[in-house]
Amino acid sequence: MNMNASPTKNLAGQPPAANGLAMVRLTIGAMLVWVFFENLGKGLYTPAGYAGLINYYIKASHSPAAWKAVMGVMAGHAAMAAPMQAMAEISLGVLLVIGLLTRPVALVAFLYLASLWISEWGTSWIWELLVPVLASLALAVGRAGRAWGVDALLARRWPSSPWW
Image 1: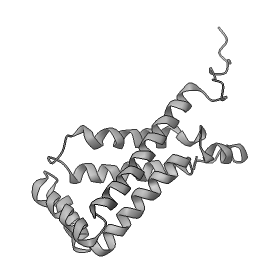
Image 2 (image 1 turned 120 degrees about the vertical axis):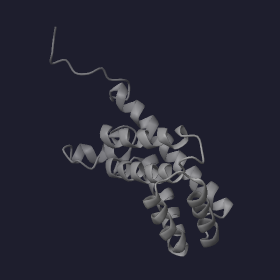
Image 3 (image 1 turned 90 degrees about the vertical axis):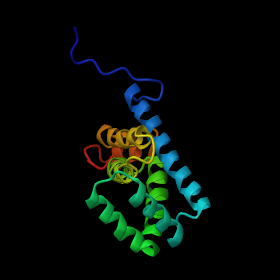
Image 4 (image 1 turned 60 degrees about the horizontal axis):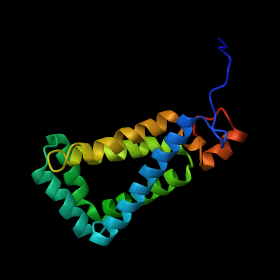
């Protein structure tokens, strides 16, 4: 048995797992872009819309009391927090779709989506955000930008960089 054989590659020259991760990356990125436009249409990036949603989570969710305190601070500063959330959602989504700086972006997406998951405990189906949370973590670990992304071009120039 030849232990030095290279892994199977497809027509694009990428291992099949890289293409699978790229599909997940595109899906999570598209989801974040979609959510941005959905929330924009609902007025959730206005101070009143943002504060209303966060206050709903404070009252209805089963989040830990310490987390509810953090949410209370965010609701109290909705004029600043709402546009920050909007920028986070659209930026993370676009960067994942184009596959630029995928590892750090996916890690930030993991943390961001995990915070939303904690905020929504008891108000929605538990798997609704848990699957994208874990998928984002897999993107960070799996270097998902090296197939079908800008990171693939950057990796040719700097192959040992931890950023892609």
